Image 1 (cartoon, rainbow, N blue to C red):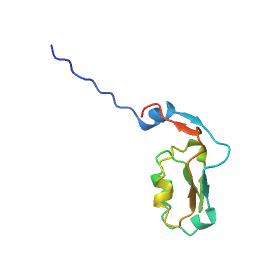
Image 2: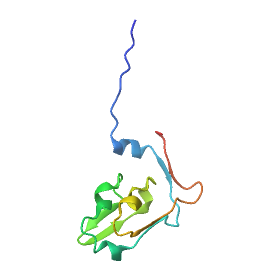
Image 3: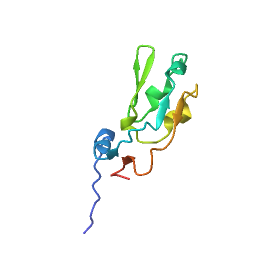
Image 4: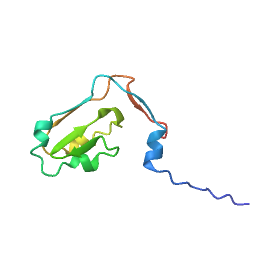
Amino acid sequence: MSSKLKLRKIRLEDMLNNNIWDVDPRPHIILDTSKCRDCEYKPCIRLCPVGCYVSHGDEVLFSYEGCVECGTCRVICPKEAITWEYPRSGRGIHFRFS
């Protein structure tokens, strides 16, 4: 008797909803928005996997509370406007599907 493994697709949003965040009141990512004004492409808005960066006119708004600590924003920022550190020990995201 053969058993077939049945795979179920899970949306990214559903996976993230299962994680637990212990938000550090001290922001672990600081965004220098004055540098963002001169950025033509604003890749952080398009490439942050959880949408921590949003466009509001010419401004970039940022919320660190939902960050999954991947570091993408720090690597792709052409203006070096992002100061990024890991949250203090024990804080931040606790992955449930890792």
